Amino acid sequence: MAKDTRSQREPMLAGDLYLADDPQLLQESRRAEALAKEFNESSPLDPAGRLRILGQLLGSLGAETEIRPPLYCAGAGLKATEPD
Image (cartoon, rainbow, N blue to C red):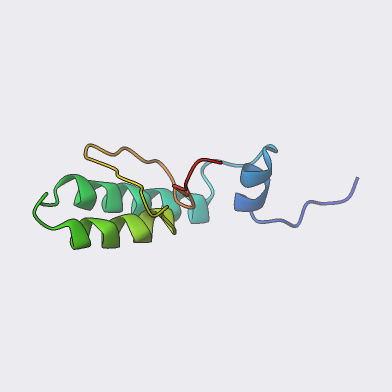
C-alpha cells in the first residue's frame, strides 16, 4: 500500500480519515475561532467591518448573504453562496 503524502487537510476535505490534532488543522481552527469571536463582538453599526471579517473567515459570500451573530465555526475554508 502506498504511503499517503497528502496534508491532513486534504483527506479531511475529501471525507477520508485524517489526524484531527495536526498542527496545520489546529492553527486553522484557532484562526477561525478568533475570527468568529471578532465577528460576534463586532458592532451592528459597522456592516463593512463585519463583511471584512466574514470574507477572511469564509473566503467568499453570496451577494445577498446575511449572517448575524452569534456565529460558531470550528474551521476555515467554508463558503456562503447563493442557493442553486
